[in-house]
Image 1 (tube, rainbow, N blue to C red):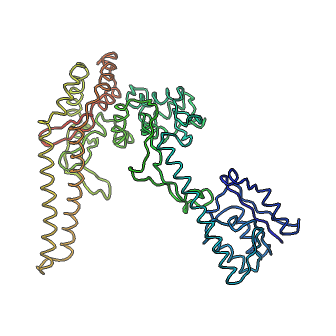
Image 2: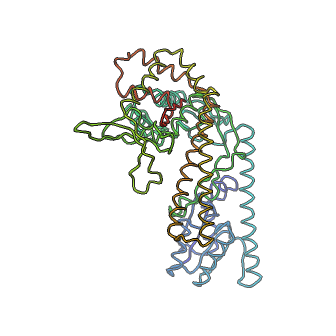
Image 3: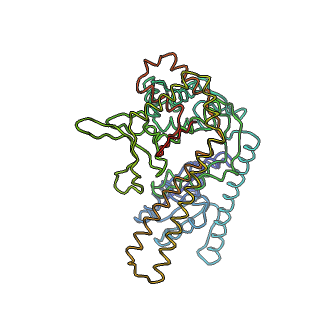
Length: 502
């Protein structure tokens, strides 16, 4: 049986007008027969080896169903020389004649040379086409043009001006999502709550679906384009063209290019920059803030951390003479926990009352919010963090020095077993890793204290909500949300607590 293979990619259809029908017609003429099987790949690049029709042709050749293959040109088989030679070798081994409409290639050393040269030229041409297209797209981007419709919720694409414009109906939903996230006021709880809220309100997604997923909401909250900054040439998609024809494990992943290669494009802003930054800080702590609820709800859940060992402090309870006692503890009972904690405990009632009274005082007197910000960012107040950083650096140095001494003692042949040495080194290594983690977190907090400004607008809205509802009508959920608006983290030390605000 004679087979006819034809392929065209979208770009070639547009530029050369080489239709599939024309290819098949010419191949049938070359075959001098109407009794042929057609194998056609439409809109697939010649760089890809795993094409549906080509794969079927190769399988049929292996099964012995095909005795002759007719193709318009070698670059229809493949735009990569190596793949072209693989296909040709498969056909040769099974005695299948490979015939081209444009050119005859004898099976001689000279014929094989010219065939390989033609394949190399085809690969070179394809590389040049890709390079020119990429360069052209980058140049358009540098001119401020948006290359295509990126399907960003809240925006539409104007083909005539090659610009992103605001889609007002969707932009309202974007503003609602940020408002629900930053000022839930009992309406929703976290990202899942926002997704459920939008679904219940029957608001369609960008693709017209009726169901919102938490990941879609999260992507909207993290998209910097809403602040008026949009980047092109950010992602490297090289090699991804054939992913849909490959098994999942063989697909090429998309990678991020170095930031210096990104091309910044201005677009109309939907969200205020300060609100966006505030949302990013909350998102960075979302895993702690919206962790799965335990049997008993705790007011400061996700906010407390031991100032010494660095472990988060979670709510616990135990029974003392028949009476339930609630407390926060840094102890970790999970198997394999690297840091078991130093055993610090604090009564839930005591610290909950102290923190709520602190936040309530800010909310009762909105004019004190700015003062609280100044106090939080005061340079003199940073001396505690500086002393803690110095202490942690000394502890890390001690742990490192201790490991070096143990290795030296072992090398000197002292009467110490290898197992004892290994266990001691392991303990010091775990201690060092825990201290380094604490140091990094504390430095990060110190940087934010010295650089960021307190979000007065957010707390002012919280104060308005608090004053309008009345302190006697505050529910547990209200209190928890208001505390989380004001406080990022609370570090508990032996003789004091340290509150970190946004």
